[in-house]
Image (tube, rainbow, N blue to C red; front, top):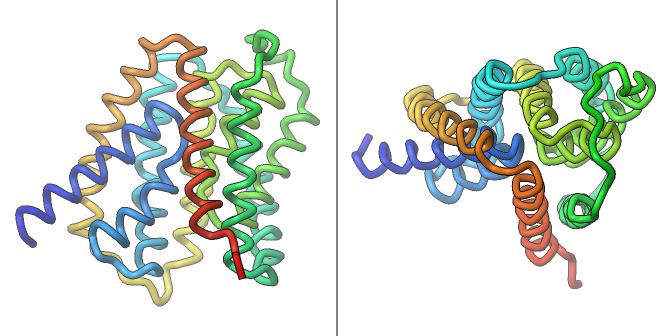
Length: 252
């Protein structure tokens, strides 16, 4: 493995870890394109490897965030458990939808969510008991189905769902979303064990870079105002949504 490839792998990992640690999402979106277009993996191997990379980065980021601030474990495991079943159903339904339409709907959804995050909202509740379990269950089902239907990790869907639907504080939502990402990635890895190729050296380098990025991201997130963090996340989601709609909208 060349030095340039090692440096690229570390930079890719650092970018993924920084995104997960600071914003609680976006890692799965960054990982697959980076593995394909920067590191030269096939789309199938990139998808499989991304589950390992994003899952471990998310687990590490969740551990860091939960050590430094509030972390609603019960909500995260409800989202993870219920979301896994709903994601399976969403994945089955998505098989009947053309890929270009899936990606276009995916980008459109990101535009809607990003716009909602920019709207003024009431102060998030900080009392865990004030959040109704039926809302948690419905949120987990909805996010899980969309995650499976669109074939993504779902961190960028989970964070706004926790903030907008359950009125979680932004930083708490980030920690909780990372736990859900790790759970979903673990289930995805089990489903891709057969017939997949893992370049463990490359994966190890990316994860190492991700650890550094996660450390920087979680530290930065603790120092930035919640409003600034939320607006940054919203613009991040909107930018990715615009890119996907322009790239995939079927003109013919």
